Length: 64
Image (cartoon, rainbow, N blue to C red; front, side, top):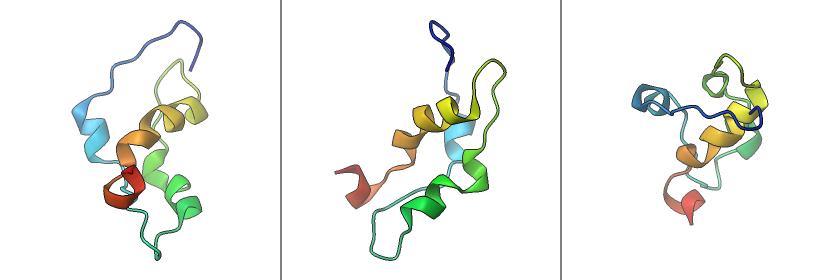
């Protein structure tokens, strides 16, 4: 994310994100590489968007 830039996270963006539960069958690398994590927002790098949205994808055991 560009320094000093802000962007609102819309609910519809959160609805399309994959979820990661932290189960033994879950692969964290595959979770990060999921195509639904590739959301483009003008003025922001793809990496910065992933970093900002990542906490919203954690559920259950992964959230602890």
